[in-house]
Image 1 (cartoon, rainbow over the protein chains, first blue to last red):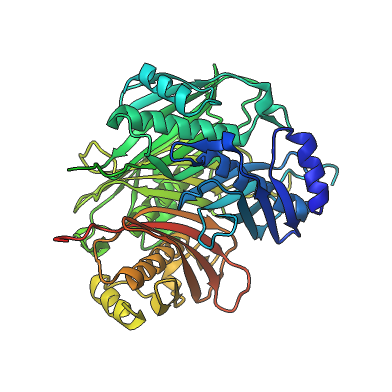
Image 2: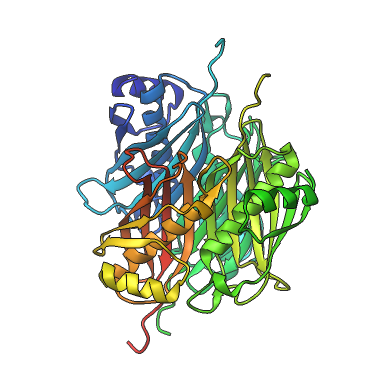
Length: 135
Length: 135
Length: 135
Length: 135
């Protein structure tokens, strides 16, 4: 799947989601999450759960771009390190595939405030790929 | 802070949040997240980001119950393992403090569908505690 | 496999290992690592890698006690939080199974200095279970 | 500290260690672990704990290259994903600093078998930096 196909799938499967897939090629993916004042926490900065959802969504997009539409691919592990507060900004997530196996896809995701050099969060995410039917 | 005080703080600081603190005593905390059909994913089950937000919220409540109101306590690390799909159910999160230091609080959280014995997710969460002013 | 069988397998497969399986029943496992002055770090305390190896060994023992002898079960993810320095002491590791699936086993491990109440480390460990041949 | 100084410190503080710091500049570090037949596991491949110790050592070297000799800098969190078996090979660890704060240093580490393109393991490691005395 390419970025446009993944965005179309996200719009249908996750009506509330607002992250936009800008690029996805099976090896890397790039998503943008527009700033939303409803997704802040004390300190006037994008909340942690918002960034975790973005990291998960970025690795899902990367996995779908590698294996095709498999809605039942599910996250099995997500490790998030919060590094700096992003403030009130669009967030850019860049995912990189570390391993694409038959059963598991593992990648990491760097999240930056748009225009910033230093990352505000880093995630490692594992997706479980459902076995093919028929075979 | 006790459960009622934390619920009052959550209602003000996170207007969209719907998890309810049922118990918090500095060593353990228990939260309930009512089922919300807007928080599902393909497979008709509560979404992963919803469970991550609940785990984070449970460790935040546990930390506040131990150290008092410190809105700027922030998550530094969250590791989530997804174990089973919870389906369409209220979720119960039980947090346990593993270490309460001066700078860091570390705990783990088990999430179960209400009434289920087996957990659907497990998280380990670290909060950074801001240094006291004045001293 | 029971504790004695796992200890016999460990002695053959890992000649340098010194952790002793005291109990393993498929749901929990308990291992003891005798204090070894060659496994310390600055601060005169058991080193971090020694505790990581113990956590991994505890989850391996728990997994083997659940599924039988599968030498090619391998760790896919290990998340370790170091909580307190154990000092110069035997370490006790207690592992608990969180999920035993067909392809993955997930558990957590608490490590304490022998006789201490508070844990010095906590781990979450995932093992990949090789598919059965033949079928 | 530069690579030579860190190697000298490692030789004194960790007599059994055999990883060699090839480069360390506060932003990245590169270590080599020569293959040792005593560090294998079933499958005739370098063991998981050996790779965890290498990842920890790489982030320690990177941290010391950034902040100077602080023997009491300690690991607080290490998350390891095992991706492929490295076989019987020297291992190369490349660490990258994600955040260097006053209290915490966070980085990630890619481990490859020497000459291989694909990584065999990925780690995210947090070190706690002790507060300066006197000030």
